[in-house]
Image (cartoon, rainbow, N blue to C red; front, side, top):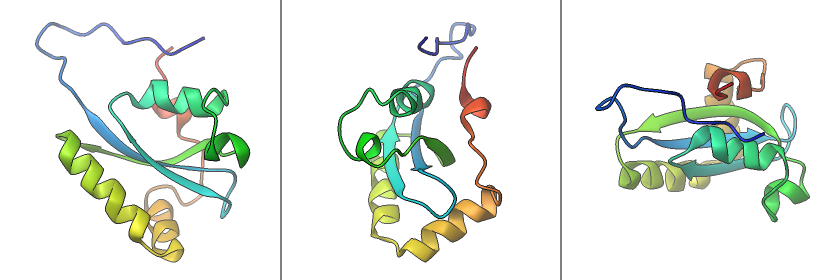
Amino acid sequence: MSPRIADQPIGALRQRFFVYMMASKKDGVLYIGVTSGLPRRVWQHREALIDGFTKQYFVRKLVYYEEHENAAAAIAREKQLKGWRRAWKIALIEKQNPQWNDLWNDIAIP
């Protein structure tokens, strides 16, 4: 079942943008993306609903994410991270998530 939007007071809703990294396993294949609906987008990857890279390489674990105020900032950060060396990406993940835990439960809305 797809995650739903939590009930929030009117005025509390604002557009949020996220850059996220998913992995096939610890030190495995990495994918970097940007979205305004993190729970929905990660769910789509986890369920292999999106044809392409994440489905082909079994990239299902959310291992890193960060929030941005606007789409332009999120897209710029995504491009920056995609240009980084793999070792830098791994260091960023391990700073926030040293065990490479799947962060799905942190963002999923029951």
